[in-house]
Length: 496
Image (tube, rainbow, N blue to C red; front, side, top):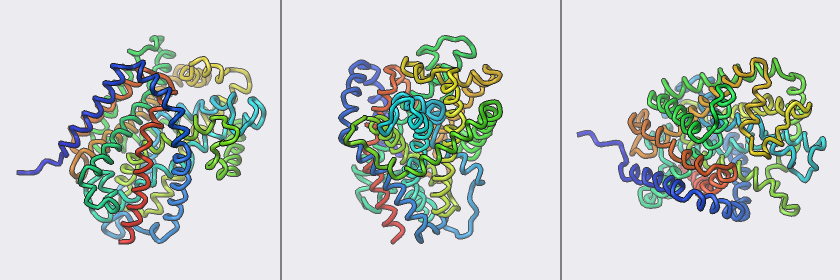
């Protein structure tokens, strides 16, 4: 009789945690909202500096590994094997899994949050403040951020492809440090933290993205944006990534990621051609210069004297976001990087992940800034009035054939979200199994596709960007410890 590949005790524990976490939010929405408001400031003061150091150390460690002898290690048991996926599909899958439709949200209007409340002690609406408002988003989605994603991939990829260990679990990747404790309560706790973080991250990402899609639907169809429309769109997104993850890595996730990249290129090409091309190119060039000249400063700026609160509200939030997703994206990067060297995996992730995000800030963000500078729209005011999602759709609607462009933008947002959550479902299924030979069991992948819709439903119920930011900072805490364990595990593995 063939043994079940399911890790049933852990699967049931993860499902129970999901129901408990979401149930508490539905039963006590006001109390949970108030609780999040209280703990956010305390969390930032206590753990903010930890997140800053995690970001810096991740990037430094990856660069050291890439240029060391370890960078030449091929992720395969058979030397000379060709990579499983083409360069285009490999980059597309990593990028789409790593950013979701959040890159559309932040890429379009992150500058507007800084326009009236600029960083580095600058006065609002001055020339330096406007320049930094356009540039700062590049730092939050640049090499440091993608280094946080890539670091967990090192021990996981080495174990899975070089050692032939067919277990895609964070506890397994930590085994060189934890030893036999990886099979006990400590190992289960680490895997449970991974599940908790991914469920929390799912709620945050969809909590930001679904209202943006709803604003697009309202603009095109006139259907009023309310909680029921949010739920309907959540169901549509869930159905799309359920089909994708059910189809598997090659037929589903790969094809959806490829399609997503083609649509992105189409949208951005239209904005560049019909938008203020020279302005977009000039501001983008200026922004890259600002980030490159101040890269180390930005990685260490915590503002301890002036206490503006900018790093706590933004950089620490974004680093927490990347840390929350890091074990999951690391698992996925490891899974799809067979046949490549460690150096290729590192630089492919750092370079193409950063460039992929930056293109959105260059094109959509600077187009929105152009409309602001020419007084065609007042995006920061709309954000202050709680109309951030409507502001994004209004920016897109100013393009030629506005309704068509808004429709394309909304469809792209849905597919972008699906390419992240089909991967999330895939990895949640993998971590709740004892082993993964090719793909996780189909029904398990499908179950987690729909289960992932529960946390965002709960967080949409209480709403608010501050709540979503607090959830992210909170669930990232265990991820910091996991990142350290994974680093130590990799060093032990390659020196065996």
